[in-house]
Image (cartoon, rainbow, N blue to C red):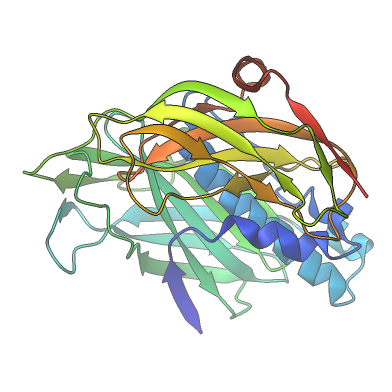
Length: 319
């Protein structure tokens, strides 16, 4: 059974958090890349892929595999590929970006391929994924990203910014645009949009962390955060999110609460509800962003920017 889909939900970390294998799972990706501080959208898409790898690692260990077996595995690799759809006209049915990726994986076999494109301005990330239950070690996957670009998609060339392959043990390798240039015969597709397009992301005005301690025994164990922003020249604000790093872990996950309706300006919530099994201790806030309905995002994963916006870069979770 094969399927292609949009980037998977940010809650994949929960499968890991419920297992004792979490510390090992936290180190799942083999290759770690720095995220440009001014491109929160690319950070978001890469983090979602990392969440998938973490969950796969936890599941693989839970099936009885050992850490020693894990250490002997080689990470999956990409040997070639191409973006196969040349032109996408906004509003035309049946037109989607498509691509092929040639891969090689160790004995666990391929599980997941994720790709991310950047808009001509570099402000918007758009991506998708391919997953399979077949434990194939070599081959080529071809898939389309069937999530619509949206009516506000920026016209011009959208370029492949990163690609990640993940095996069924949660090992992964991420390739940058520069690395993919040596492997892919074509890295971009062209968007034609004769209607309105959103070229600028929302503007962040201020932020507030409403509590610095979360009690898991409370009726509503919630970290409450607001970000005030405006998107007066765009389609309206869709969501705000925080990147949260649990104590003792090397990964971060997303705290997000989408708006029901587009908002031109105002306070956007980025709350996080904690499960009863959440670890206690000091959590770090490692990034933030506000995104509009055209998937333009503004934000940062810089510690200095987090402190400047919220006055702190951490909070505490107690029993």
